Length: 94
Image (cartoon, rainbow, N blue to C red; front, top):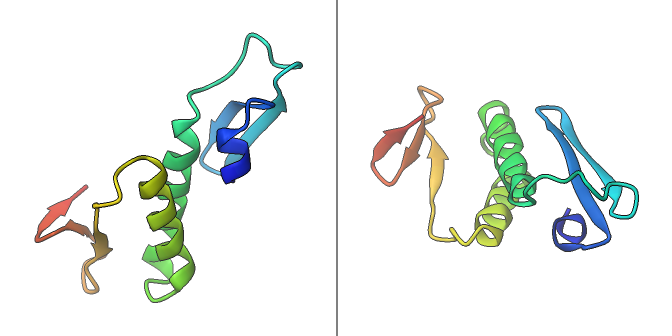
């Protein structure tokens, strides 16, 4: 993921809930989405997985990596075990 997010050779051209589509830059000269969306997608997918598997370390690592790449390393988000809601510090977030 990191390679595609920072590569000038590849452009992000489609982003959907189920995944992303990258094309070589020479084939997608006029297309291309903001590559911050790569990290936003990673955050969304990790949050979805954490709702299903809150104790699995993989989604937590993905969140940390994505927030670090977006310059938001200080964000700490965790699901409340009984509600499935997300917290930031002590306040609930959507």
